[in-house]
Length: 89
Length: 345
Length: 103
Image: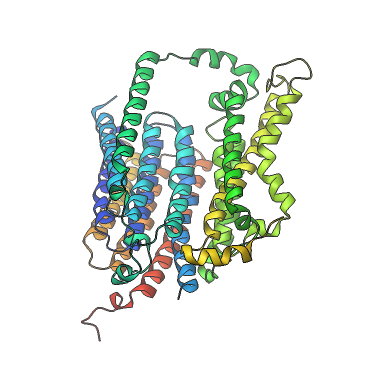
């Protein structure tokens, strides 16, 4: 089972590496932000798999921290961009 | 260690190098910020692979969660297109940091700065490599720390080292944060903390989410704080989550600290440093050393100090963000609006 | 390999497929709204299926609940992020929302 988790983790890391292309290409900030969102979710999956593979339950807490903070970046981006637009017509 | 684990570690190392390189050499600052956020995630995974879940937890909270917010907001505030707004309007997303290109290369002193930075980085790398070679496997004070764990008041060795054996370091770390906070205070951050511009209403869906998520953030912070006694967790991670809760509330239009009295905000900011100091001095009274907790009470004292530190770290982290978000984007407007909103106490 | 392991493998592989689909969609889809669509598949189903797969390996109720909590949080974050980014993009560039060949 350990090898299975590791192989899956490698696959997901490769996914992250591939989606970096979208950060470079953009074209809008929202596209880049979406990629960051995908990084986060993929990272959470990797952490859960590693928690099982390395038999380290503390990693689920790391995932939990990622999960509660996942939405912060997007909300910050959207809210500050919107309020800026209204203050600067 | 099987070959797949080697492959994963190698892949992570390569990914980190590429991400770091892209974060430094991206076309736009916004791109750099996203790469840096991804770098934080990669670092968290690297710490996991190095069997350091404590650091991974801190990296997850600070690197991937908080730093991204601070970076994006800094970009909004500080980066304006250098040659007017004409260029910015070409893009379908006007005004975004997208158009702010990295202008450092055109700076006259850039070459010297870069050489200096390279030299410093190379020097640091050399020192770190020497340190790793010298420590070797299982060296250092691991054995000694494990032997003293009994009397430290906690079961988790990392917490024992951070809050008891080397409590001095942690105390000064909280002090560094406090100093950073004072810097922000001098730069006008007090305005952001006690009031400032209120953002737009977030809409029904977002306010529902924020209403659900904020208590959960506080709860997770308390959980991590409590967990620090026996497993990875502790004041810094918990503090960042508390700060994140404040940031979330502010983004939704509930500036929490604006409803507290200035005295309460100041208390929140100084609580951590002060509690360390009080217990450190109290340890002197029975004839002990500074910050040498009595064995019998060590567990309780550590929990108390950590709680206070977490609250202060939360307030400080929130102050960083409040300072940024209280500043308006364009420098010209800022001069006009600054005096009118100043809320000195 | 026992039944629980087999189920774990099946669900985790299915989750990986959705992550791949999300990544490919993010890279290949032509506009921001279809990319959002791809992203949420990875957010919701990719992580969800991996969580379900790992539940079969959990030995305590607390661990199962924590896994489910992580998934629910990711669901809430993902759907809200999708909504927020979608609304943001729509306000910025409405011409992308309606393709030219639509009425």
